[in-house]
Image (cartoon, rainbow, N blue to C red; front, top):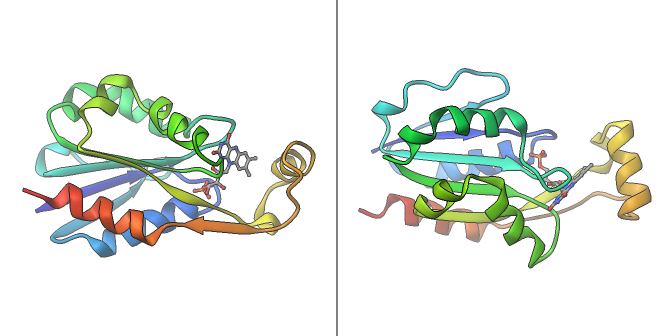
Length: 159
Ligand SMILES: Cc1cc2nc3c(=O)[nH]c(=O)nc-3n(C[C@H](O)[C@H](O)[C@H](O)COP(=O)(O)O)c2cc1C
């Protein structure tokens, strides 16, 4: 079984989640950071997993553009979708739904919010300002669910 995980990240949480996901999967798994690398031809892959992180309610533009360009092909593949997002429920589930085109969301075998990481020291000056003034956040915090990532890997690999 061959799996392609295409992700976008700003501070590394989604990259970390994608790497954990890779470690839980069977067969060959290729990780592609879509903002930095070109994704290979989808034809050779059984599973296509797409993941991004949420900023002001949206996933990264590079991922959105890639999905838009490949949508007809993706709708013929076994697809998994995930996001990393810091908002609590029910907002994060709504963000997951809105992050991807409706038909892809409905087509996907598995979709999940894996959780989040905010490393306050790593944030750029604008993001620190947003966190401090809007969210009253001035410290690092994290809640990335190994359990959800494991379950996601199991479900997408089911025959
Ligand atoms: C400036 C800023 C804005 C954010 N906006 C949202 C948001 O609108 N909704 C949300 O659920 N999480 C939001 N987050 C939390 C991120 O989605 C979370 O930290 C995620 O793990 C980042 O992943 P990354 O390091 O892969 O980019 C925001 C974080 C920052 C720093």
